[in-house]
Amino acid sequence: MTEYIALGIVLLTALYAIKVYNNLVSGRNSVENAWRQIDVQLKRRLDLIPNLVETVKGFMAHENDVLTEVTEARTRAYNAGTRSEAIESNNLLSNATANLLAVMENYPDIKSQGNVSDLTEELTTTENKVAFARQHYNDVTTNQNNRVQQFPSNLIASLFKFALEDLWELNADTRQAAQDAPKVSF
Image 1 (spheres, one colour):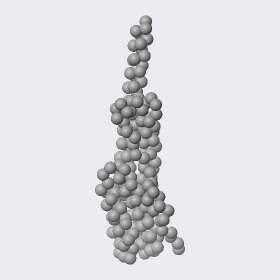
Image 2: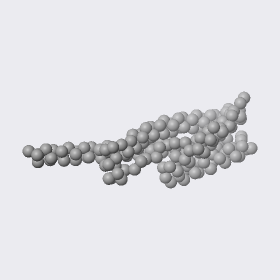
Image 3: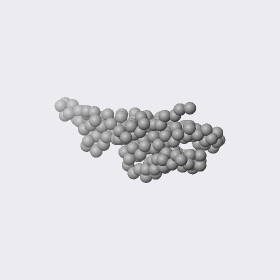
Image 4: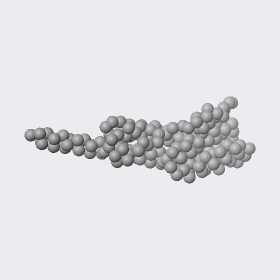
C-alpha cells in the first residue's frame, strides 16, 4: 500500500514537472514570437526612414544635424546584433525620428508635399504599431520572467537553463533625449 502511495507521489511530481517545463517552453516561445512582431515593425520603420530623409533633405538643407542623427541612428539600429542592442538602438532611433518630425513642422513647404505627408503618416502609424508590439512583448516577457523566478517553477527553470528575458526599457540617455525633444511653436 505504501508503495502505491509513494509511486503516486512520484508520478504526480513528474507530471507537475512536465507541466511546469511545458509552460516555460511555451513562455519562451511566446517571448520569441512577440519579439518577432516587434522586429517586423522595426524593419518597416527602417525601410520608411531613408525615403523620408531623402524626400525632406532638399527642404531642410541647413538641418543637417537632425538628418545625420536620424541616418546614424537608423544604421545603428539596422546593425544591432543582440536583443539588448536592438532595444537601445531603436530607442535612439525613435527619438531621432521624433526630432525629425518635430523639426519638419517648422517647414510649411514640406508639409504641403503629398509624398512627405504620406511618408509621415506611414511612419506615425508604424511608430504606433511598434509601441503596441513593445507593450505586448513586455507583457509576455514579464510573464515568462515570473515563471523563471517564482518557486517552484524556478527549480525546473534553473535545471533546464531558462534565463530571464530582456524587457524593452528606456535607458537614461533615451529618457533624457525624450525630455530634450525640440519644442515646436507657430
